[in-house]
Image 1 (cartoon, rainbow, N blue to C red):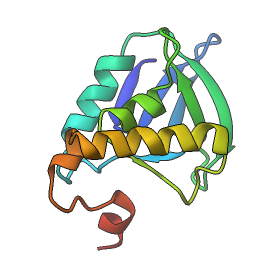
Image 2: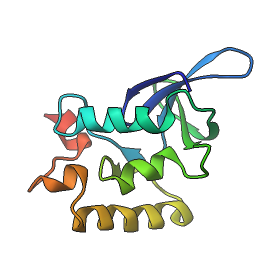
Image 3: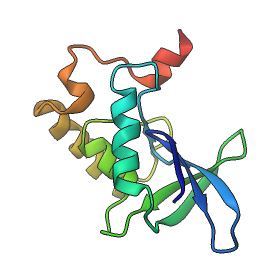
Image 4: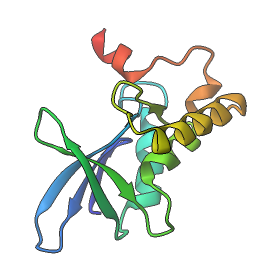
Amino acid sequence: MIHVADGDTITVLTEDKRQVRVRLWGIDAPESGQPYGRQATAYARELAAGQTVRIEEMDTDRWGRTVALVHLPDGQTLNGAMIRAGLAWVFLRYCNRPKICIPWAHGQETAKESPLGLWTEKHPTPPWEWRRK
């Protein structure tokens, strides 16, 4: 992994030295101008920068980015870690694999109840709503 653009977008360097922009599948992190946007980016960087990660491609988005699960060296996914830290939402519109998404939804509820990260806000605005404004 070579670069973290924000809490749900990274760039990786492949074994053949190609740079690939990867959108984290099934989650949506706050945008940089939103509350907790910077924290989400910093946390993703803390977990993944300089690490060798495994990309499990799930889809390609309309901009041609790879949409993937990003497996960290410790076995967890960056996607799930962002949710459990309260720094991303499960993106229900796209998170369509129950074996993955249901545990993430439970992790989101735990972060919300704790409250952690963006859940310390009274009414956090999901990024998909924020982008519409």
